[in-house]
Image (cartoon, rainbow, N blue to C red; front, top):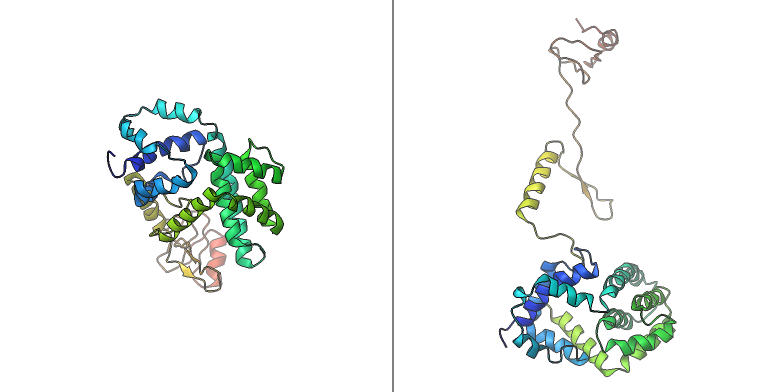
Length: 297
């Protein structure tokens, strides 16, 4: 083996090309998040996770003979991905999973979803991964009959499964789970993934809320805060708000002040008094004088 993290390096180098070719937006598992996850796992855990599905058979030997991934030209990465039949399914499957996840979680939290959460989690993870590994073809083919979907469009199958979960179709979810459980290699893969999730030092999230701050972004944010801070007062806390939102209150522009303490509307020259002033010094006469265009005596 060339180094302890040779597989990690290949994954991190090729990941941007996978995202570009599959059309995944930058905020879905950003590159810095992917790098952190793969660094934490390391080569040994990645190979161990792939073992039940025979996804990485012979991979180590190939990598030992391969050049440094940084020396592989972009054209070779792009050509290899274009030859991968499942690449076009990456974006549709990911989009469906993300769209359905929020609704399903809300139903679970509200108690409206009457299904086994373990079976649902297992089904969603396995069906989301199966279209992209050789061992997944058999499972997708079997379940395509259950859902009456096109075996060449796994995203359609995933969508129908998520819809079954949303309507608490217990019978259909159990059929999918039974199909997964009868394949020992999928169950072993699921067991290892679950163990990695439990042992992971932090909660990895598929959505990148904020990118790593570059010098350009930091400078732009600082300038925006400086400009906004000239016009905003401190925020106000609202305890009745469900999230206790703190919102900024816009300062009112100060009114021009006359020598006697009166105030002019914007547009009036405070030195000459020309224009259409409205003097607000607390007496009615000043108001009448302002309507006639005269300054108070």
